[in-house]
Length: 132
Image 1 (tube, rainbow, N blue to C red):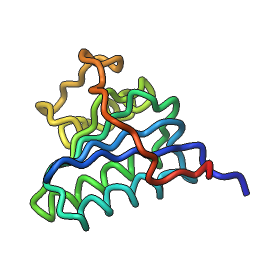
Image 2 (spheres, rainbow, N blue to C red; image 1 turned 180 degrees about the vertical axis):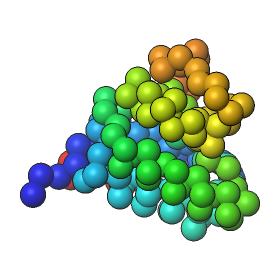
Image 3 (cartoon, rainbow, N blue to C red; image 1 turned 135 degrees about the vertical axis):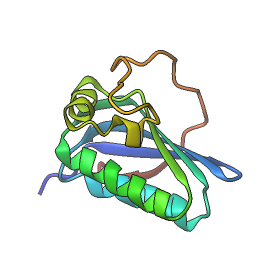
């Protein structure tokens, strides 16, 4: 069995978390996404931002992981937002009209897949990785 090629970095400041994903999100690596969000929820994080700048691939398994994570966060009274989705994920969000759930946009509007602001630099420490 091949290990998923996804690394998850997490930076928490008080009740906010920035999760930075790097690599590919597919059927094999989507559980890492779910686990990182679940960990934030268990730790009492109120606002979860997920930076996808370094994600090179994301299929419908990744989209499903994000939708389930958003549902869990919303059910717990917390927020989850995706930032800088790769073109493939932006296309999936557009086709499914669910960008408003994950990007915090009005229904039916989607930003450029390249994003309009650079990622915020933070000290990175891997917390989960399928490469290890």
